[in-house]
Amino acid sequence: MSKKTFVLSDGSKNSYGFAIDMAKLDLERFRANPVMLYNHGQLVGKWENLELKDGKLTGTPVFMSDESEEHALKIQNRVEKGFVNGA
Image (tube, rainbow, N blue to C red; front, side, top):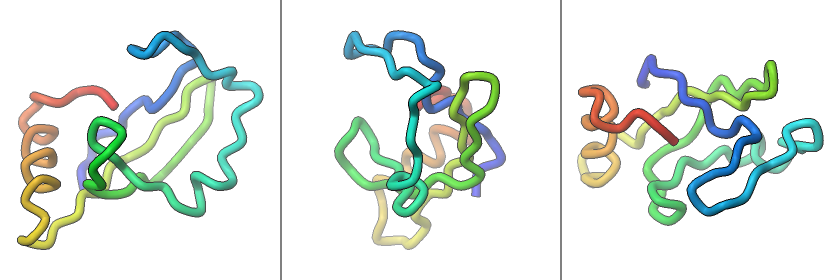
């Protein structure tokens, strides 16, 4: 498990041009299945330690570590080496 904590959302406009009202955020379904997707598509792991505090949703990534999960391992390596710093 990575020790890095990511800000998953903070209410500001994202790269797609929309913002999430953090005061109305309902995490019930996401907590039941906290999948971590690469570019909103490929499953690479899950999120743990989800916390909504001070208008920010944060989480800690847990990458799939089976040798057959080559893409997830690549992303994990990029996170650990500081090349991927956002989610």
